[in-house]
Amino acid sequence: MTLSAAASRNAFSTDSMQSMAEIFDGLLDDPSVRAIVMTGTGKFFCAGADIDEFASSIDDGTIGEVVKNLTGILHPLELRIRGSETVFIAAINGAAAGGGLGLALVADYRVCVPQAKLAPAFFSLGLSPDGGTTWLLPRLVGSQRAKRFFFDNKPWTGEQALEFGAVDELVDSTDLVERAVTIAAKWGSWAEMSRRSTKQLLDASTSTFMETQLEFERALITASSLTPDFAEGVTAFLEKRKPVFGVFEEE
Image (cartoon, rainbow, N blue to C red; front, side, top):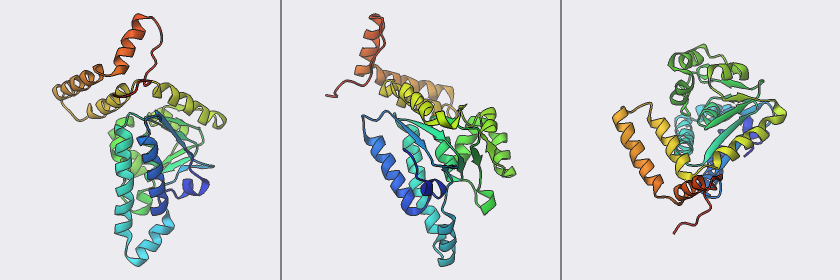
């Protein structure tokens, strides 16, 4: 999934945000799609909001409704991505700012070019953060480093983002999408329950007691043990071959 040059620069206008969400929803609803790679165009991965729309909405008094509507599209989409069995890989080719930063951080894996920038952007506009950035970033880099990121209001280069743990690896721009697709193919090859349950369990682990987490693990591993994928995994292990998941028709 590649954002056009115009969408990369101003992805979060009301119209473009709705279009993006519809495309994502279609992919997430498609059981044949095991992984999604998203990238931008030119110098931008996803630069966040359309500032011109903000300005006109301030003038006509509708800005509150516009911001509420935009986050009302973005935030449910991020929750779907985070809880879905579909693996989401961000191929960060350029600047990821504001809500666009949230879209990068919500990914399961981030491949980044050195010249990319992760930018907070919110404070320059007099806003507080959105797009899940205050939940996602501390889990990657720690609470205090995340606080400094927002309050210093200085973008991180690709190298800094890798050093701090905000992205998973750096590659040359010529290899970016190919590497992201390689990761998507690998991570997407695992069983559906393995993918979805692990994503959900890891997110829950930072906010639950161990006793609660153990019960969550117990429920999900029991459910996954009843799937055809588990039977395939056991058979493949005994036959000393690589398992092939997700080729079964549901009854």
